[in-house]
Length: 167
Image (cartoon, rainbow, N blue to C red; front, side, top):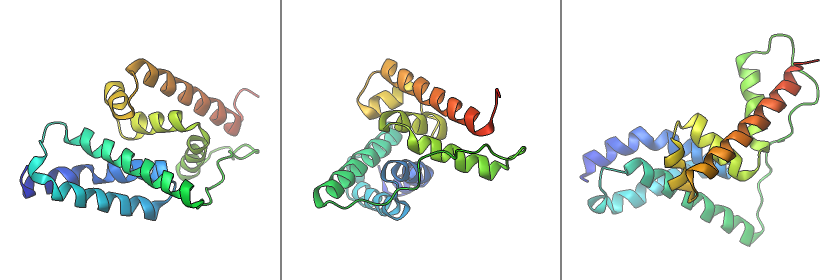
């Protein structure tokens, strides 16, 4: 892949890589650093990269680099304070704004178990297929479907509680 192709392909995927890194690391600044480091690594290896499968390469590299950074945090005993992952106890107003609802959905997704959170993010936010997610996470498409189903069910349940439906 030449430098112009790499720039075009990476620019198309950098936002997805950033969102994915931020969802794994829970730190926007570190996610930005990770994406910059990823670009640098890809740039150094640009002549060895094929265009086919570039999205998979970027997302897998993002995941691996985020896991490395999380492990490094654990080794040095450094933890970042996460936003409260607990959904609010009181129901929302009668007509919640899109911004308010989005904030609550983000908190609910953050409270999901790691695998479900990752799968829901990749499926619903990044629009990846079950097969792509399975290849990225090293599991089977069936396991990905199950995690997505469980994650969406928990999301639906918590949203119903927040919106006070069924009372």
